Image 1: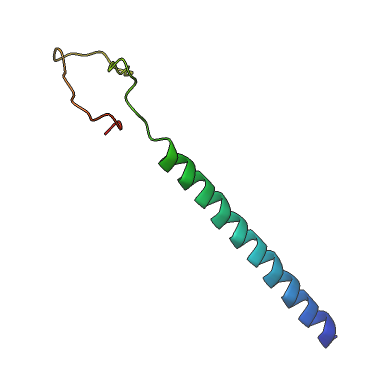
Image 2: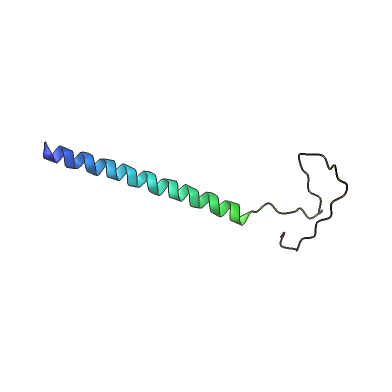
Length: 67
């Protein structure tokens, strides 16, 4: 019976390790995608929003790298 218990413990730890590595990997992939493609301002300089502009024209200044 003791061998079965050790195998069960090893299997649970192995599955937990695989799940942890998978979650970390997916998180890193998603983080990398969000860093490489931030939400830039298009070349036209016009940004669309979901709400109407109620306070008049808004002028934004940004550098060529989109900041």
